[in-house]
Amino acid sequence: MKRKSTLNRRSFLTRTSAIGGALYLGGCDKLSQSPSFRDLLDQAEGVTMGVQRFVLTSRSLAREFSEKDISSTFKANGSTGVDDPTYEKNASEKFANWKLVVGGLVERPMSLSLDDLHRLPARTQITRHDCVEGWSAIGKWKGAQFSALLQTVGLKPNARYLVFHCADMLEPGSPYYESIDLIDAFHPQTILAYDMNDAPLSVPHGAPVRLRVERQLGYKHAKYVMRIEAVSSFAFVAGGNGGFWEDRGYEWYAGI
Image 1 (cartoon, rainbow, N blue to C red):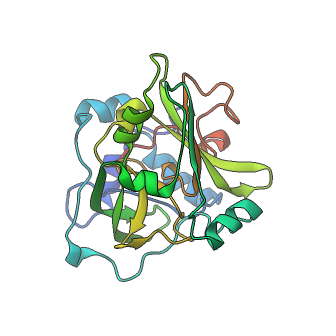
Image 2 (tube, rainbow, N blue to C red):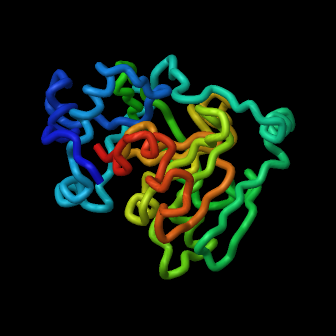
């Protein structure tokens, strides 16, 4: 995997902060392809997965905030809707008949309703969502702990990654998808969020379920999740690089 710069994300973000201490990035708008934006992102992507995991333990938490810190406005990042008849029908029914399919290298493949997800152990967290394009917001998220879902379905020994297949498309014929490894999958702040700011997740923000993986950049936070697949490698998944933007040149590991 190519490394684009020797400047790591943590030093990059610290230098842009008023005070030391890492910014905890949680999402980005549809990523610009302009040269100036690419240069900015290249500087932020120099840190390797090994370096970050040497500095931070697998249980280290992204910063969490208080209720009084929640932003009055929270911009929707990435896609703000899904042009698909099945999704539109589900949305019109308030996702009462929506199902999340979990399969691949699991012992017990399942289709879970939104009610099923609500019955799993949940976590609420208030985190800062910073976009490298220049905006940020703090939001409150509640959702099923991803570790609890994985324990329910049971991973096979050769499972290494979880791939999130989504309903939205940023390019015709290319559904959005993302992936994380087992360390982030079992992290306590990794959740399948169904509530935002004490209300059901809205369509612009990824309803009915979006991934929150708080120690990674925004393009890892898949919205409109429809199917989760446990795999041993990315070789036969879309472009083979583990994500929609990764197939277009971005780093797979987008840790902060």
